[in-house]
Image (cartoon, rainbow, N blue to C red; front, side):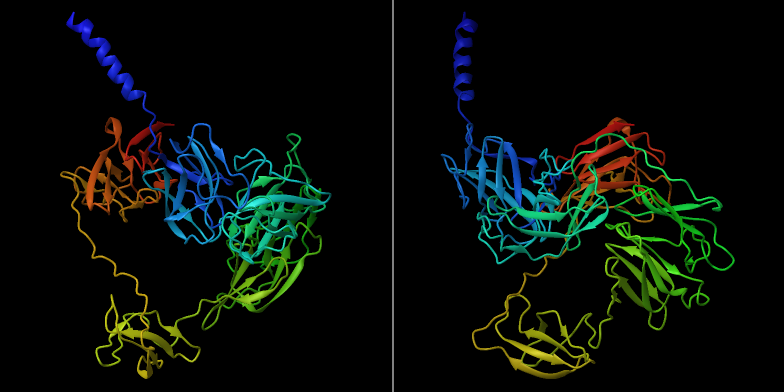
Length: 591
């Protein structure tokens, strides 16, 4: 009877507990992501961009949406707010499992903490990476890939993109652009459709907060299924397609009769079916080459002598990344290495049947592909590096400048009266002189001078700061902390470089480890677990691989993807071990 009497009382008590509606918001450990690119955490978004925050109890069950623009910074009852580095973010919508918000235009680049506040309850912070540029193109399926979300108008493709960087003139967070389209991104834009260069313009959308209307003039040879590549400065957006391809298609062209055996094919980065085939190098220093353009059904011999300094290379052709151009030096070689092979470059572009000839300042010893450009090394004393624009053929000197004059390493300045702490990086002039700020303290300076140094580091002159002025000095870095590994655990030191991996979302450091000290190099260098170092608590913990597994810790055998550490069990891995950088748990994946 006691049991019968106790059971309903216990059940009623439990019902009272579970009947309460939890209100503390919880952000999933990997719950903050770029809403347009759909990049998994750790996701990257730029100021003004749009984020999704996924979790539990984030907002009301029925949800709430912003009634219009400008977007509010709180929604629902009790009020829901999103704080990014302490700044309230404009909100598109809030719900129990997802919040859609705009990153404020003035949020600082770096790792930002995201907190959801619901009434008086507040979530633990999650992380998102803030980058000055993080271009993202909206896809039709809202999944970050596939067919682009477009509003085609004749020969103009209209896209929607975020993350193109600061706008000019600036707008307030939560506001859309003006109806006249006068707000433009400050970044330089470049677009390709199917690898074909296309004219592109953009303006801040007048009806969608944080999004730019991007207009791309469709190239004449563009076809459904072609990849759209949009780049802002040196950052490339997620890849989408122009419409959908109707079905599988096989393209081929016949090699011209009489052509020698081709040993290599160099395809353009953004248009892989535009390529140059090369045969073996001739005694004249030239590679017999043939141009193939499969969509245009073109195959032709290249009459120019394409050459390179290294006679053993398979192909003299250079490929520009994030571009569709190919290029090569024109021979025969002008001199013997290292004098340089040629001072002329021939650029091939699928948008034109006329190749572009570029004259270099002197003979180049090598030609390589860079991001949207080609780079030529000009030997000499000193050697020079020039960059070639594949669109215009413009040549610019990009030789890294050596620091002139003052030695910036361990710079010591004594301006007298106790002013010995250098508080700024030296600003150097073309004549070798430099200017630095010197103060009486590295942490909390009260007195400062602007000091001018000659090329030898001697003081040429100094001037006191105005009365009441003080420098903003970054806090001094804390002294390094020393933490011992857990008992019976050692770093896997059987490789030339002991690997250490960092995670963005947790700030922890992972080191493959063994249970015995290593005294010699081995390949594979096998680890039995992973030691996790927490720089905040200054502690270390060990995680053993499941089923007494072993992970190859040799250079290049392990890596990090989206804050997951992965590594195979040997040089020919049939099992992959994956460590979650947030939870610290390891899972085996049999291949």
